[in-house]
Image (tube, rainbow, N blue to C red; front, side, top):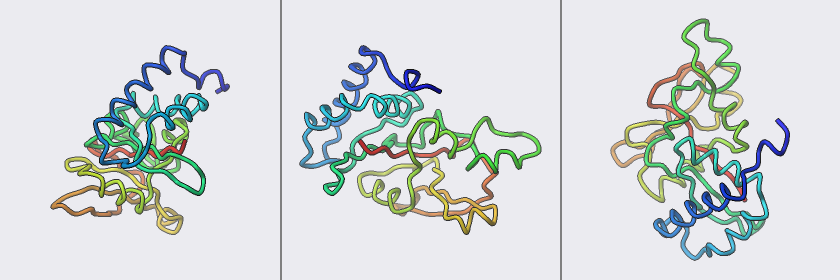
Length: 188
């Protein structure tokens, strides 16, 4: 894919920025003391990141700012849809798992989709941090980055929230369910 395919038109950029700004203003508890004007200025200078945020948006992720890294100067966007994004469900963990299925293969994998969108899966710490900002995945679950030692044994990790508690589970990486997707993270 060449770089021009991963850019939005000027009109699409403006529309996405409006959506992101509205969400930012409606959910101020997720990003106290952050200034939308500074975030928007950064976004307008990083067209590739806008493309990624648009991919998060059109797959149902409802991306929003959840933090700022003072060391790197990066704003952290994350999928904040109440449930795992609809356009990213019914997928196994990674390409290796997808290829290992002999029949009833899902269309894609979480790792490949994230790579194609130029975002990353949340790890356990990031998932738990997101859950401190609200209640997510009450009916669904989300694949998270899996340590190499677990993946080597054909497993993968996923999380959800039940009984006001965040749970981390394991499953075969080749498994997929209609209620399991993944949440992405993007630094701008």
